[in-house]
Every structure is written in C-alpha cells, then in structure tokens.
Length: 324
Image (cartoon, rainbow, N blue to C red; front, side):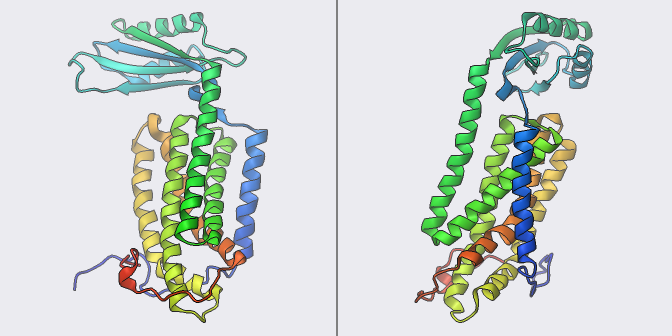
C-alpha cells in the first residue's frame, strides 16, 4: 500500500459550530471595521489610479534597480516604481527598465521639471542611460481605471452568485457571495490600515482571490449536497460539521501548498510583485476561514430545503473521488 501524506487524521470530529456566533460576529466586525478604514484612512492609490508618468530607460550597462531607487529617493519624487524589463528580442547589451512616477500631492500630472530632474538623477549614476519613451496617465484615465476595476470585481462576484445559484440552491449562493465579499473587503481594509500601495496588480489579486475562495467553497458544498441525500434524518448542523470534517484534509492540503509558494514569492520575489503576493496571501487565509465560518454559518441560518431529494450515487458526483 502506497504511503500517503496526511496533515490531519483520517477521521476527525471537530465541532466547527461550537462558537458559531463568535466567529460570525468576528467576521461582521472585521467587514465593518474594513469599511471604516477605507472611508476614513483611504487607500494608498498607486500610479494606475492617481495618474502619473511612465518612463522607459535603455542602457548598455546592466540595470541596477537598487542604485536607481537610491538616486531617485534623494530627489523626493514620492511614489516611484522601478522594474527591469526582459525580452528575448533584446540585444545582449540592451538593458531596459520601466520607471513609473506618480504626480505630487496637489498636482494633476507630473511636471516637465520633475521628469527632467529624474532623468538628470539617473544620468548621474549611469551616463549611458537613454529615455526613448515617456508616457503620462492623466486623472481622467485614472478615474476610468478605478471604475473598470470596481466593475470587474462586482462582475466576478455576480457571475459566481449566478453559477452557485444554478449549481446548488439560493442559500448556498448567498453564503458563497457573502464569504467572497468578506474576503475582498477585509483584504482591502488591511491595505488601507497599513497604507500599502493599491494598484491594478492588487485588483488582479482580488479577482484571483474570488476564484480561489469559491473553488474551496464549491467542493465543500458539493459534498454537503451529497450528504443531504445520504443522511435524510440527520440535523443540518451535524451534517454540515460532518461535511467540513470530511473535506478538512483537502482544505488544509490546498491552503498549505498555496501558502508555501506565496511565502517564497513574498520573500524572494522582489518589490514588483510583493503587493500582489501579499494580497494573495491574505486572500488564501481569509478564504479558508470564510468557507468554514462565514459561508456555512449563513447556509445554516437560512436553512436548506430537505424535501424528497433523489439519492445520488458517488460515481455520478464529480467531487466524489476527492481525497478528503
């Protein structure tokens, strides 16, 4: 018999609803606090949402992001993002970087004087550097990006609501979307609390969080639906505990392997993707928590129609062979 890794015992009997009102209350409080933080402290919007200028640099010497950043920090340009660009079509002596600088507070755009000062600061550390392209993003484009980002998140949540509603029942859909709103809202609230830069990469992370969280929730709900047909007389609370315990191994294994890769990226990935990875890290932790303590709590409170459901055989269930 092949050896198989198990992070939890094969049979568990954890009462996930023992403190259901405390966990549910904690989730609601976290969402309310996140809203307060967002509206009082605001988000530290990046160049994508505030407007700014993107400058492409080229040089025959290798790009040293640390040296570039140190040279620009002396000029107090504010929010500056520097990333090295790689492409197979580049020559061996062609080294390219993208520098994004946001407009100063009270200004609608980066002034020509600021751009000239930036170029002079970089030429001081690399005389061979050139600036083949300078592009600006104005306030109007930034506001359109904010609107598009919000619409993307809402559209993703709405699509998930419709999918789960048709796939299961409306109670499951409400619980799932409530858990997704919890994950996204608390993540954004933490970004507001610590004033971490919020740009389009964070929006991409939020959309990824929606997909990750709903995946775990759907697997558990599918097992719950199977148990509803299998244990017709079992109280709903006990059945939901049974379902959570049956899928606990799968939940912990998925979350653990994802967290390992995210922590490695957070430590070694560099500044360019650190915000994205941090948002994903929060999303995985919150998504695992909300599946157990938000989505299932709401389904339990709303109840489920347990009429004459046809008994389903495990071989017809797409998640029946999941190792839980």
